[in-house]
Image 1 (cartoon, one colour):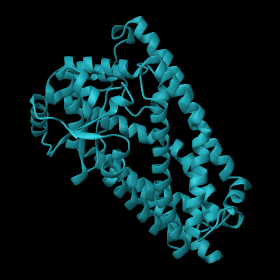
Image 2 (tube, helix red, strand yellow; image 1 turned 90 degrees about the vertical axis):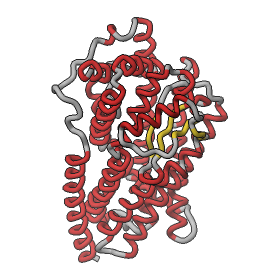
Image 3 (tube, one colour; image 1 turned 90 degrees about the horizontal axis):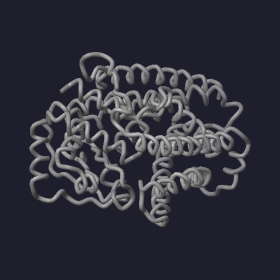
Length: 411
């Protein structure tokens, strides 16, 4: 047993080292660390872009949203740690029945439901405020359905990951970190590939952008940016939110450009095309594939770190292939997901900035871009001047003022 643990620890250290080198290499090669010329941007003052009443509304909502969203994050992480790092987790798993793989799924379901209950109050508070300020008009039944759908997707994804991890640990006592790392990396890539066609339809109904001037203009932009798209989809997002948005998901044959229906129906044409060009910029640079590759390598690296941790404490805890380890694993993953946010969001901000540059260089319409950023900020009541530490840790996009400064510099 000791020889197996020592061998597995050595493999885990190797996996961790290889994963870190691969992640850094991918980040250097694929992430645009200098997406625009001229050095650091100097954003305009918030008062020069928004009036006092708008700033007051944005600050009031964003402060409330930060409080409750982070309360939810703290609650979910704390509950996971209390259960995972105490005898409570083992007692919970002792109640499960059946073969090991069924016990793993039962444990995931129980812990995910507990986590969902722990974050219900923050989620309800956020939804109440969104209804009050007009960011949403979705009925509470729709909110409940969305919560249940999200819980189902989380249970399925988490169960698949843990089953793959534990199957490897049970079958290959020494080599499991390497084999499981590869398996989890493949699952991340596969998940990103099938997400648009298996998961997204659970939340929205999609239709093709109708034939007409807008569709012709979108296809012309795609051709100009060197992006092949078979279709442009419109999501019925307005039934749950008034926020304007568009996105690109999937890669290869599942790549799709999706516009929110309120973006198509309620926004002037020039601004809509600016959004579309931004999303086509993501497709032009294969940003979804970049994120998927980084996620896959990140999963590989995480398994290496997990191997170092669990093999060191094997004598004081359940063996990794034992279903009793499920609470501990979910607790470790919960902590890790918070700790990696700065890395994840720093990369995201760089990629989003490059897509902004692509939109500006393609449309040559800084005015529409600036008007759009102002409208996006107002429609979501986002904080134009978040604290530096908050933007560093939680900001996945540049602020609206930074994006306006970018437009003024480039054009």
